[in-house]
Image (cartoon, rainbow, N blue to C red):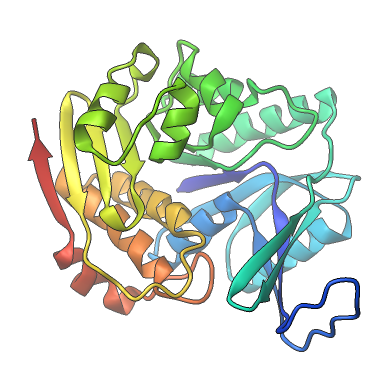
Length: 311
């Protein structure tokens, strides 16, 4: 089973308001509310791929209960550390072809709550073979919190796919215990290294030679519609994807992580693994729902993904 961690989940609320009037009343007829958070998107796609998953993280209040209800409706098994403080809402206002977001920061966790989750996390590792950790940390937790999770997992021999950015990613990469895989984009690499990294393969390869990336088996550098450059141990791959009709790209990175995790669990060879990850990312972009894929289209788009080993 795959464990999908989301430390700062939310209820994602989408308002369709056209036109959007500032300093005035806006009445909304079409409202969408979903259980949100990068790791929950990962879990949602894993279920659609027919694999077992367990969603976990920290939830609180009536918003947290709503998230659990939504996961249950989607038949996504879950177990969260419950806290008294309210989880967060994240609002997207869709207007005039634009999207304005209002994002709550979420509850601030105490040191004791952080420790309680680490204890719960370690218990959950006894029943899983692979972990995905996605998204930001909630307030109150130290920036090295993911370092503790990676260390606990490695001690148990459980592979971790880490999809985060900023200081949380930097802290993990600076420690001795490394995750099995990470999935930065070029902007996140630039921020992390303090250097300009673009979509050119030589630029990315030069960036990945930095010492902080040593010990990581898989590094997937996503490049949106241009595919990805991937380092697997000492080998490099260029993945090219076909042009698609993009409906909603939000959650495509999470869907890529889900496909990668499922292929890893199935012990697929590198080319199949990479094609699976890219295919699930594309399929998400072709659907209106976040963390949603149409498996009936999987084989067709899988065959269109090209994996080339590069020097």
